[in-house]
View 1 (cartoon, rainbow, N blue to C red):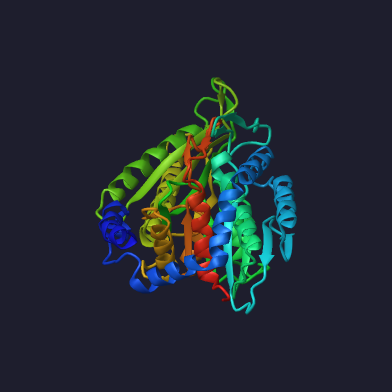
View 2: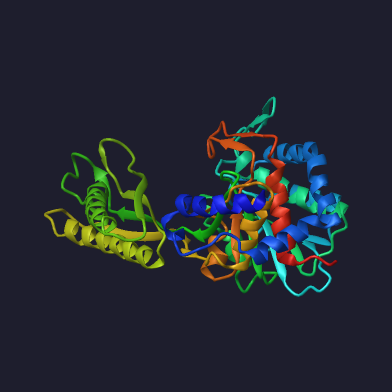
Length: 433
């Protein structure tokens, strides 16, 4: 059955994958097919998978508990501490919170020859005062952040319990990580720290769990650059100081220039590149010349080169607008500041990377049709450093992500994605026979 499914999925991946994935690629080759089949036949692995099914109610309970602890970016500490306690309750060699706020739970391997990470981010997009009470309707759970990403956090706990119950011993160390600052202005600060010189661990392979349909496997990082452009002036009364340099007027000119040039650039054939003016603000009243005007801009590209090029276009347009506006017949001048508020690198790993191949083979073994994708997740950082990394789905049925009424439904096959995360982790860490 699985051989036939492999042949069917070969075409599916090429058709459904994004443009960057349309390379001369095969689905998991025979080497990895055999490896995963052998691993899944291991009695310990079979017991671990059964444990995941049997512990589903506990996994849901953990998901609800974590969801009901607010965790906006830069304020994840309370949820992180509870997550740490949960690892201790299940059983772990050591667990700690690093200087950036990430939770690291170490399960030692026999050889300790490398470190494999299984990650889920802790933070949500919602402010601290948001009502995060979980509402339950049958198998559907509604609350801000329940799918993105406390379901992922609960999956890590389920994988650990499965491995512990089956007494699985790996060659490599496995570190279960709850990262901070994945969302929005958090700008991947948790994972950036883990791949910096200040990290407590050296990571050889990275596996994240973060949203998406059940078969989505991300092996490409969608890069982005984000700025807050701020025009400043003296400000004054709209009548009494009429003619004084107006930051709003300067910002309007800057946005127009940028949109015109960026539109020309993105129309050029090449890897998809986008831009967006997402927020604007400033001023104190309708009858006051503002002393400050600002806009937040997001630019993305599948290509590192094109990302740098549209970034350059943005900067040149802002400076050009500042000069042009100050050259008009206005009193005084405006000044421009460009603050970087986000920087996520682009990159893609070859489909034949062993971790990608193991992920494809594991999904197919479990009856999941994999679809390779590019996305903006924690995996961006290791991928950009050419370190094996994938981001997996949480499974189940999710909707309304980043909304107050976000929903996640526990479908009958939802535990398959927990098994998928475990199978890939063990395959990458190596099992001691």
